[in-house]
Length: 228
Image: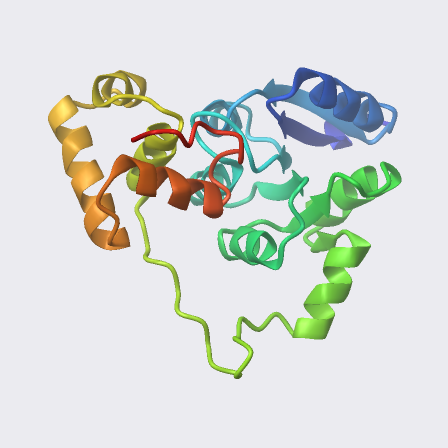
């Protein structure tokens, strides 16, 4: 097959062994080409802008910038890029958030490897693709977000991309000075974002922000929660 017709894929996964396994699975297919690998959400956004892949295979729990926020930034920057979330999390909340932020598909890591290449092809053609268990739940729920009484759930406060970035770095234990250096902004600006986060979320300490970030899937559950 002509290489120009192959589906270009960017892999975004922070675990090297997993990433290497995904590359081998995809490169075994003659119509798929892995054009890059990212080990953090921020790197995934930067590489997507530079490489402009047809499909980004995106893990959710990654350092510096989680996969959901990276998905949003990639979709805003490159409308033609399709994002396939590949995650260990199968909770409805993760699936709903991924879809709301522009993901075209959602596979859980326990899914058979054969579905990966099928999913890449499917979303590259403009379709959606979900793991069988996820697809079944979506059909059963009708993609509604209602509570047990049938009332629409209260939506989480809308945070800007920068606020999400700052929140994740706070949860990862970085001080204001470190966050400022990582994002290329001033310490004063970091402090303003921190204050805005506390106001929007009605949370008034670092430990609370960290717990919120963990609950929302922005960081792994083993992130340091001993902050006092």
